[in-house]
Image: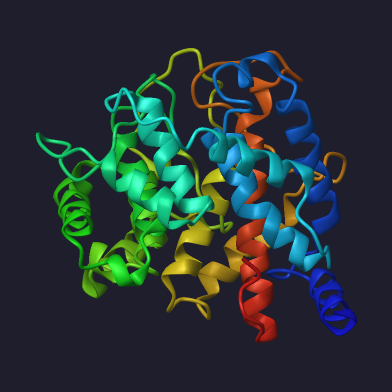
Length: 334
C-alpha cells in the first residue's frame, strides 16, 4: 500500500503535456462544487441529489482518477452519495417513456456496473420507431447535453456500460445499429462520445471510421492546441448565451480525452499541444478550468454559472492524468 501511494504521489507531481498543473487544487474545486450541489434545492427534488451530466456524471468520471493519483484510499463522500442516489432509484421502472428514467438507467449501468443495473437499462431501451436501439433522454434546449440530438450522446454512454460478453446480445446489436444509423446527423461533440465508446466496444465505430473521425477532430484544432465549442458543433443558436471567445477548456479537454481513449495518437505532437494548453489554463485560484454556458448568461458566482467549468475541470483532469499514466508506463488510474 505504501509503495503504491508513493508511486501515485510521484505520478501526481509529474508535469503534464509540458506544463504544470495542480491535481490537488482540481480535487478541491470538484469537491467544493459537490458540497454546493448536495444542498442546492434544485438538485434535490425527485433525486437526492440529481446526477447531472455537467456536474455529477463528470465528477464520477474524474474524481476516482484524481483519488488514485493523489494516493487516497477511499472514495469521497460525494462519490458515495451520487452512487447511492442512483442506487436508491433502481426500483423505478414506470413510466418507461419518462426521459429521466432512461437517463438514470444508463447512468446506473455505467457507474454501478451491476447485473441488475444493466438489465434495467436494457428493459428501458426503445424497441420501435426512429429511436429504436436508444433510450429516452432529456430534450430541454440546453446544449450540449439536453438537446434532441442528445439521445445519441446517451446511447454512446450506454455503449460504454455494456460488458464485452454482452456485445453480441440482440439488444446490444440494436444499440450498435442505432449509433451507426444516426451518427452522420450528429454534432462532432456527440460523435466524440461514440469515438470514446469505441475503445471498449469497437463494433460501434469500425477502425476505418474511427481513424477518419480522429482526423476530423484534428482538423478542427486551433494552432495553439485548443478547440472552440463551435468546432464541436454544429449547435443551435442561443441568443442569450455569452459570446464565445477562442479556445474553450471544455471543448479542448473533451476532444483530447476522447482521442486518448481512441488510441493510436499518443505520440502525435497535436495531442501534446492540446495537453500543454490544458496544463497552462488551470485557474490557480479556484483550481478549475473556466468555461461558460452555451445557453445563457448566468449571474457571476451562481450555481449555474459554473456548470461548464465543472465539466471542463473533470475532463481536463482525465486528459492530463491519461497523459501522465501513458508517459510513466502505468496503467490508467480509472
